[in-house]
Image 1: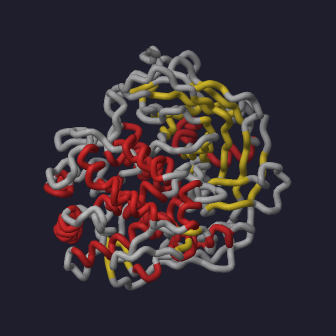
Image 2: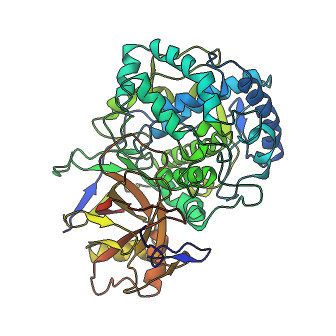
Amino acid sequence: MTDNKDFTKFSRRGFLVGTGGLVLASALPTKFASAQTAPTYTRYNVSSDEGLAMLDSYKIAITEMLNRPPCDPHNWYRNALVHTLDCPHGNWWFLPWHRGYMGWFEKTCRQLSCNSNFAFPYWDWTEEPYLPDVFFDGVLDPSNEAFIQSYDVFMRDFKNPMSQFWDSLSQEQLDQLRYREYNSFDDFWAYVERIFPPPGYFRGLTRGNSGFDEETQTAVSEDTILEALSDKYFAGFNNTSDDDELKYKFVGFGSGPADHHGMMVSQGIIEAQPHNLVHNIVGGIFEDNTAGFMTEFLSPVDPIFFMHHSNMDRLWDVWTRKQESFGLPTLPIGSRLDKWREEPFLFFIDDNGNPLLNGKAQDYEVIGDFDYGYTPGSGESIIPKRKSKGKVSRSVKVFRSAVTAASALNFTQLSTRNINLPYTDFRAAVAEAATSHVAAEITIQPPANVRGVSFNVLVNPPKGARNIGFDSPHFAGAFQFFGTHRHSGPITFTIPLTKALKALAKNNKLGIDMCEPLEIAVVPNTKGITINSLEAALESVTIKIF
């Protein structure tokens, strides 16, 4: 077993532990998304009186769906399996796909609950960094006896109906599934068996221990949320660049460009931080490397999934309204916008139980006919009280680490990359009154087993330090994988650096005046889970000033 006690000691206090600039700018897309006004349905904070009342209707819908036969598309588990089959992560279809998935399922819950005003409440984990107590009651808890308690029973009831469903799929649907290496029903079902948790492991958080750990608290903090919302682009390409790497593919608010939505490439702050870490803290990773529902692609089995993703969608709506206020683009930019819009979403089920076989990403680029809006929550302060009338800079400055061989990520030493930043840009970015923001795009070759590993990110770590607290200005945040992915190749995660850099600058620990390079370090932390080897590598670090 790898001895990781020196660098990755987990406690409530701490853990341990070639360049070039490119300016990105682009014209606005021809079509703008627009936030909803005077919606028919309202998504309330889950802890408000109205939100709690919606949960009563939600319980009725859940019970109805749990009691439906496995051949019914509106069975609770059948809906979760749509997510297992088709959901995108680590690419720029992450947000629109989940908006469509949530929107159609909300309409189903509205119908089955007999509440004509039903809308999903949102869980504002920035204000409530713990699992709300009500989700330990009745069918809001996946451990409740109304849910299937073992894989053997699940297989007995669902394998044949799902096999029949597979046989009914169109060639277009089968082509989409092959992107995920589901070349046959047996491939798909083997994956389901792998991720279905054993009895007693459905959730990591309990009523007596419902709070977030330090990494997740950082990921959902107001600082992190505002950094994510400050991004000026959804994602896209800079067509004016001479960069050989697809003319520099950049990660924005909606994660990064990919060839199809079964491909995992890169994650923006909002996905890499609150999305992934909240999934993992709720689902949990147990000592034997077992994962709860929320940690894997069967996550919609846990009823809290829809409150979590309602908040993710709310933040997209906040970002959209912020972009509109400043006259900034709300959709991907560049020559591939049409490709983004045309991406097929072929597995949604409408509120009448009918398959939606002609869906596309553009159907969900705005809230549209789902016709819901949100009561205010965390992040609203990013929107100016008055629409900006002045010219807003749309530039993004990017600085890359020197091209070097990938360095192994392990538990006994820091893996680092140095980035030379121009004095004027760096100084301006960390100034006390600066309005610019700084993030690191960290690319790693992932380990074969991603469960139970948190990758902590440090800025200019002290030489020879053996333990660094989570409250240290050197700690910028952590990134984690959500789910066991059927993919290979490097993945990029985005970590906000602004808060850490400002704190270090205030304490003269950045070396700006000496023109010293910025050092970004990554160290894995197993958080008490036994992992014999990691076999992961740090490939590169890119600093983005936006």
